[in-house]
Image (cartoon, rainbow, N blue to C red):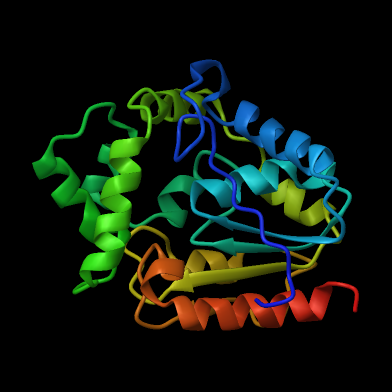
Length: 225
């Protein structure tokens, strides 16, 4: 990705961002993305969103005029409550993603749902650090926001003309590849689904070279030269 300006966003309550409970959930973080794009005066942009970040990027998409492409990674666009069952594999550990306090044993249980089998120690350590660094209140606040109703992400996809690429780790334990292939997205870029080998739900850590190649190809196709 040499030659591109890259901006990484830590949502409120996550990473290096302060703990700010009023900004948790779904609507507030999506608004953060809109404000950030204006504050940084971002020019023609490709937005990359993995998992929750992909959902937030979708929610903000129609309010981000500089976006020229959206890469969704392990993010199944949802339309109705019934879509949840089709979009996600039955995974008993997924409830831990919405639990405030996580013991060391629970974190160890959660990692195989987020990484491919046999994932190296580096990605495991990064995810453990991210979980421990985040505000425990962030997770139940997200669950409450989901229970209150998710925006119709499929309607957003039907309305946008921004090229949208879909990517998924080959061994993703959470998200259905068949669901992603079937999503109606008139501006879908290239093939229905870009499957990244040697990766689960976190391909940028598990297969960084393949992920970087996909992102560079996408950016080269949609950004002005």
